[in-house]
Length: 292
Image (tube, rainbow, N blue to C red):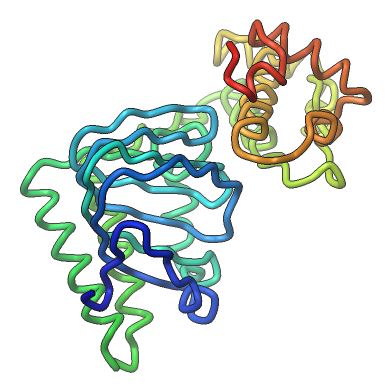
């Protein structure tokens, strides 16, 4: 087997990732069984051609073409390949990419954040260009260039920038008035609470009053501002985000339903069951087992 190539069924040796914070490899193979993955401590960017189903957070995406898949370590994910697939992948830790603008480029991109679609479809020219970047990464990774880490980081930046060129980011709203500014601050504060890692560090803010206190504004002002900007009540936005996190925890972790309830700030599992059923129309247990 050629160095840098992972054949179907071969386990990926992550020792280089653990010691250097980075690994790049080429792969090919047939169908794969489903593997649910919890949250990881590394980013992953995959160039792949094939047919697959991607679960990312509470999203399910069907892919039947050549694409880039950009996976954030804080969002649970799984991939089921339904046919022969081929491509490249690189994985890297947050520590590896830290510094200057690189970390901001990755973490600030909606392509790699919860709720965003992590798939960028490519035409033949775009796929050829990114394949070339991966081949360059493989050559640098195997070589002895003293500054190879910096060159590998530059290659990662190039792939991400190319993805953003193909699928540009939506422009964030300009904070032109007080309502827009306070809504932006609320959304940031809401998102910073996630992901939930364990019941030992449960969700702290679950009500509009909680967020109003955190933002040092009156709850009525917060509610009016958010309704004006988003068209939704503050409580609805909070409930949608809690429900999305609950779905991710049920789908992609082995945590018990009671532990998930406590981690999301519910005093009793029955409260969580009732809340989840009201929001989704099904129970947590039925959702987890797919009986919906």
